Length: 325
Image (cartoon, rainbow, N blue to C red; front, side, top):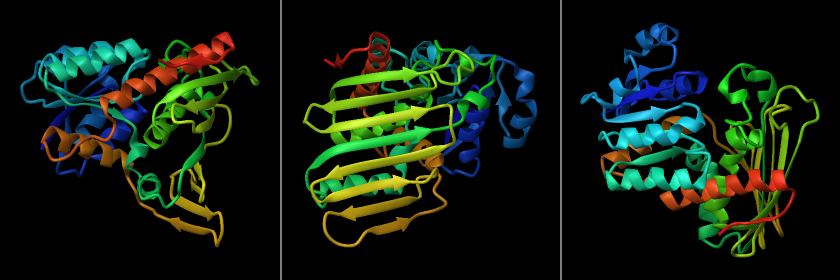
């Protein structure tokens, strides 16, 4: 059993902790946050000890790993502190806000022989895994284009005074909290990105965050892509892969529906329910620590994802195509 400490028990930190309450592989046994009295009742519910601060967590020999659900700008320092004190790290996306910081984070983890896992839970959904199998088996033939849309009403959900509502913590609006998931799925599906063009917009103008971000991609292997994300509309998700033999797509908020439209023949739709990808990613993190699995998001994928994320921000700001090294 991996004994983990949760750092930052906001709504998503609690989602992570709740997902593994009954796990036999990893459990939150300690927690800390900025205002400790905000988590007293919750920690009693899950049986977690409250630590006075982060230093108390990483210096505690009874803690094997930390789960970071903290402001993005704090991730690098917290990762470096943790791995240099012998702790494995699970960090919510984005791992950092710049490629250089991501490289440092993975380098420090490797130097200390610690597992550093970034939270891209959609990698673990059976429907996404099925798409990868269809590609790898050549059932789809050559992939030619990928599309993703991911939206949520964050404009009305985020605390106006909270860190998520600051443009410095949430650049390019929905790209930081949501779009980066689709970037990771695209990298897993099509490989590295060569260049992109991004644009953002503010229509409602409620707060300082960009409300809509859209991106056109060209991958190194010639595949093209499109990604749209918004924090100013209803929750919506779709991921599509267009290939020479047909189109396969994931629909619904919970990714439950997989539809395959072949170039010839009948459309086939299947549905899977009661999937907990948050639990699955944390248990894979635990299995990787114990040497029983390999976390699917490699350091190369994690760093390249931040290179693409950074390029989106720069492209939208400068209004030009950005080529990625």
